[in-house]
Every structure is written in C-alpha cells, then in structure tokens.
Image 1 (cartoon, rainbow, N blue to C red):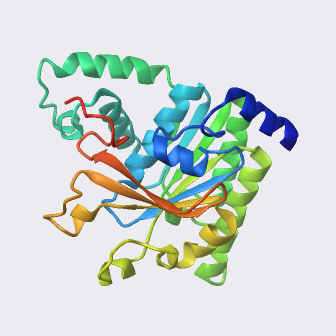
Image 2: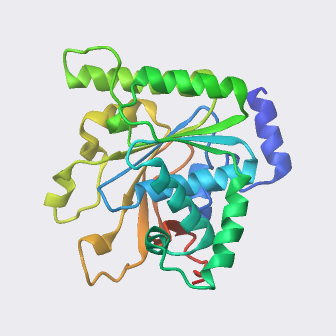
Length: 281
C-alpha cells in the first residue's frame, strides 16, 4: 500500500488513530496506536508493571485482530505469564490463582476467561538464555507458519549476543541492530520492555528520563519510534494521592506530541484500564 493510499484508507475509516490499539484510549490517541514495523519501548524501574503492561497489549492485540502474538518472556517463567493473563482476563486476583484460595463465585470467571484465552493466538516463549540469533530464528519460523502480527520482548536486557564482543556496549549495539532489522524486514511491530537505572531513585523527582536507560539509550534515541516510561508514585510515597494509578510518560513519539497519560493499574489483577472505567471486583 502506498502512503497516499494508507492516508486515504485511514480517512475513510474515520478512526481516531490508525495503528493497532493498546487498549488504552488516551495513549492510542497520542501515539496513534501501534504501527507495523515500529518499535515501542516500555521502560521503568521494577514494580512499575512493565510485564503486566506488555501482557495487556498482547491480550488486546490478539483478541482484537486475531493475529498471532509471540511473547518472549525473559523476566518470568511461562506458567507465571499464563497465570497473569488469566488473572487479567478473569479479574480474579493473581495471588488466589497461585495459592488456590478461590471462592465459588471465582470459578465462572476463571472458566469463561480460560475459554476466551484458549482461542486467542498468543505464543509464549519462556526460554532462558535466549540469544539474538535464537530470537531471529524463532521469529522467522513463526512468520512462515502463522499469521504473526506482534512481537513482544519482555526484558531485552536479558538477551545475549551469540557472537563474542569485546565490550558490553558493542554487544548491546549488535542486539539493538538485530531487533531493528527484524522490525523492518518482517514489517511487524515490536514491543520491548527494559529496566531503567537506579539513578532516578536518587533524585527528588523519581520519574525516569531517557538518560536513565544507560546502555539502552541508543535503542530509544535512534531505533524506537515510541518510548514510554511507567511511573507509580505510590511506590515511593506511601501517602500519594495518585494511589492506584500509573503515569505513562511519553518521552519519544514519532506520531505526535510528548505527554503524560494517567491510567488505572490493578497489580492484584495484573490489569491496566482506562481511568474512566470502573473496576468490576
């Protein structure tokens, strides 16, 4: 499709954004959704909800488009990821699913959610010690056999390069270049999560910035089309007036302005929701 044809198609559909939805309305409007061939970088300190955020995108994309999502879980084991998906879909607390402390009223929710997820094309790869060559090979295999629509790499800092490099900086550059080539060659969006450095926690304002990405700053500045940081004020301020909400700080955006979007985050359900929606507990 030519660029003119794409613009014409978007106009005729009269959508508020042209890419695939993240499931978060205000974020979609600002970044124009998720586009084929683009890289969306999601970063933040631990406990900010990066894995749950990525899983929410995976679930939204797979259910909404019917296309396959391949999720490389480098932070958590496959069973933990599946349980988080089930918790967010059923709105049954993740801790209940872990321990089995369930009420009668939980079972219909779990059964319905399990039935929905059984038909959703999300492929979870929980392989540890994944290399950049492994990543490329597995994506190429999936591309040839499935209707692959989205790639998610949760914890890119845990990927190593198959080749030996003299410095960590050169190794990181090789990994970043490989991801960039994947996105362009496959014409598939890639969502990547990574941790920011501890430097932000030493400042009075603990919201992360691009410089807190340290060795992954090149990924943000030169490769990623959209960079967002997740920030929960309640992690640092127990009496925060923003308890229950997460700031999505849009630090880079090829499709519009930089901004901050506030959303609801329910860590007990591994679930992000639009702030205007009420949680059904």
